[in-house]
Length: 347
Image (tube, rainbow, N blue to C red):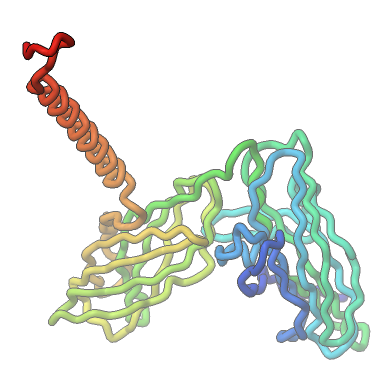
């Protein structure tokens, strides 16, 4: 009996920085640098050109009735011509990951999404553009919606028997719907937990809670200082792949160097999602094995807006006080000036 082997990836390429006053930044098709089907975003709104997430995924906030238009590049990395199927499908966020649904499973967002052409035929090592249009209905429910635009290639076995390989790659869709401005993104790093793997490698788990109104794709670095003998170490990269939906909390893991002593260490972690960055600190000691105790963090990231507000209030109070004293002094000076009556005699 014929069996099917499915290989799935949610991938998208990075783009060059946007230039000029055009609505989108564009990159021309490349020769594929892979051995199967590939897909990547090639348009990004100029307003989001500096956001690394928007360079890889379709991320937007629109009102009901609006239309989103993007282009993706679909490529054939094999040495033979191939028929590619391009289609939108459902996705969700859970367990710290962005999860594309199986097959052609639909949801609201995929039902609003169309692609043209749907079935391009690509030459060996060839590529083409596909238009993606998302028409949000007038009665669309407010909130953030998730989906994927998939490019799928089916490769039958050469002798008609054995394994049929189905591979697909996709571009994520994060579409926020609602009136007014875009919901604010934010998150907190609530604790750091030191640990040690079975092979002796130390690691740190940062517990991250999404407190904002948009999903997050997390990356970042950890630095260690004030260790035994004044040692410092790092930066160490956060393990990529953690995605948080609204109000979700998940650990983000940072693997470290096996040669590090147990500590104590002063740990400083900086985590980003797009252009948003938060930093936290804690003093940790690595256990001999397994997970240690979670250590609450000292929040250190973000601009101290409350200090700015207090400073502005103090400045306004100082200006008011100076103006009051100036008016009072001017009034006293007028009272001391001698006056001359109209008849020429001094009063």
